[in-house]
Length: 244
Figure 1: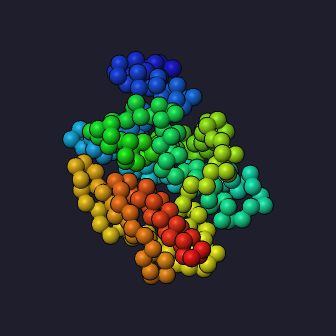
Figure 2: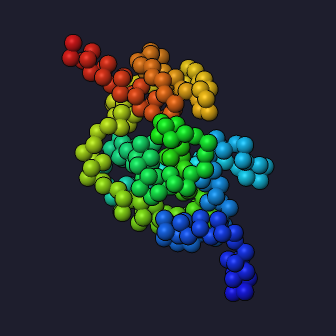
Figure 3: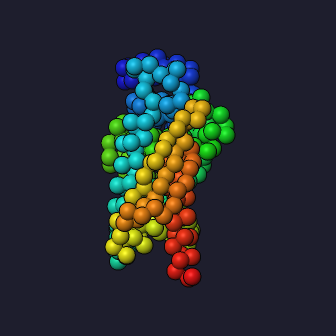
């Protein structure tokens, strides 16, 4: 108890405020505060990052995998009679960049993000979605898989997820395109044909091919958005050919 008391009192005022905000967001008290501080540290904060203060990119990678696995298992149990295509589509709608952006804003993660991005750059990039995934990675390393799964299912899915709306909403073009290709037994790939630095961020040009043929090309600061738009354009093009 004395050691715990000392640890709490030894926190700086800034860390105490940060920890209290995390308590309010997560519903539990973080143990390893450094992990959560890293989760909110965007790569654009490079001038402030030292060897011992990494950006949130590694945690984002981990959180993306954990979130995807938990959502996949939850849907697998929830829809026992649905096929792989349906489950893939719904999972993609839950973990796609736009939905994670919305969840990040709902949880107030945007207010804690450390970055050198302008407000416009934050809104047009994947920074908010990335910090959400990084937070999941931090929770996993701090509290383990069981507690992370509990947080994702109870605090995210059951509290902030409208499954009926997701089932009705059909704007996940990547999933729609994937299902179409699976039905037609065609191979497809998203190719980054260029990625140029524009200010502090890259601009991605994504080309979507099916069976070696170019279907569409789209450019955006967010790779995920560019892929979604490329899939949308490809679907629209294929639809026109079908009815002409």
